[in-house]
Amino acid sequence: MADSRILAVDIGNTNIVLSIHDGSEWGEAIRVKTKSHDNVELFMQKLSPLSYEKAVVSSVVPHLTEPIIEGIKEHSGIDPVVVTNDIESGLNKESIPPELGADILCNLIAAHKLYPDDYVTVADFGTAFTTETVSPQGDVLGVTIGPGMMTSVKALFASAAQIPEIRLDLPNTVLGRDTVSSIRAGVIYGFVGQLKAIVEQVEKEVGHKVVVIATGGFSRYLEGKIYVNKADVKHTLEGARLACLLNI
Image 1 (cartoon, one colour):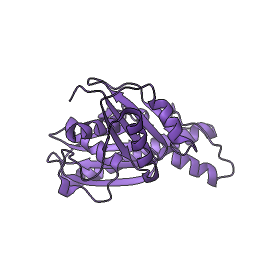
Image 2: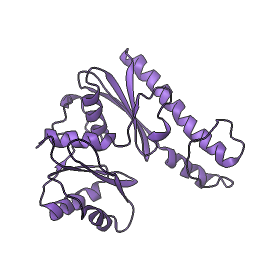
Image 3: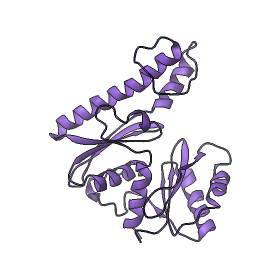
Image 4: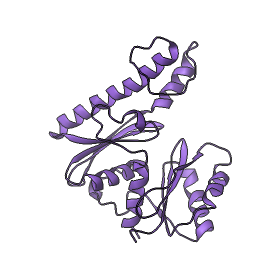
């Protein structure tokens, strides 16, 4: 089973991400805009040329979950594993909060599998900026949730008359000399600071150093920054794949 081709689908607030794991590595991550009016149709177009033996779906967008599941069944005849708090996860089920999102659960599954002897905090830089922490015993210790990088930029653009809507890129300096570079510096280094503060507080509360994994669309900006041990944009998909293997 471990070397089966597995389709993993992560339905997020901004993108539906799908990719195939061939038993040794991930293929291309394909994205469809979640809020597109023809999102399911576009998803099916992207799915059409792919082949796989197993499938798993993680979703935080309830109204899209069933259409995507049905699309996978129609395409392949496969009934996908759906990530919920009730599935086998390798974590202590009693420690999983009832409201924990499927994406966060996937992050924790992959984190605990990757670093089973450590406290691990995953920082997910998506539509929301979340951090989630798991203990060496597989206990879900807790979560923080705040606005993500682009969510923050869009709110700034909408609220300030002279602030342009920009693309986020890694700034060369924190000392911005024009509006665009100043916004980039404020957002990127601001989130580095948020993560640093959260990690320090987590370590204070658990009484132990934590390993930090960064994931999500903007995690590439954090690689090599303080407190980030590993940056992997496919970390959530990896957690979904592991959930699939544990539930087939």
